[in-house]
Image (cartoon, rainbow, N blue to C red; front, side, top):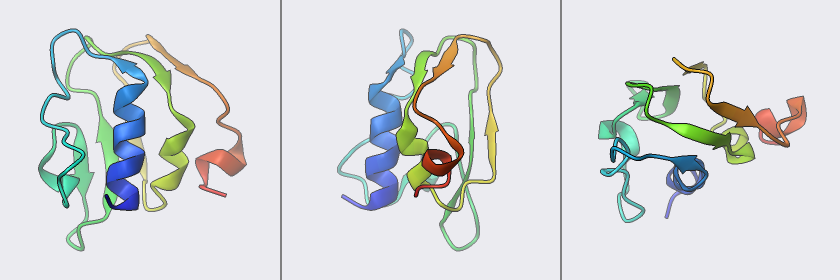
Length: 93
């Protein structure tokens, strides 16, 4: 499993997804660029995450810091909690 897939799966595991928005996020996938909520650069680097609906809630995993090319995170509701997300953990250090 690639580092970016592992980071995304950690993010998925920490979220409550009652409507299966993240159902196509698959740990066996080599490339997460076709997944819901994931935006990639032309070089297939994860550069954005965005919530398509207000059905997700939970903790935003510190693993988000391992997505070192991430530029934007769009959250459309206030049902997320950030824990352990110091500037160092958000930068993947």
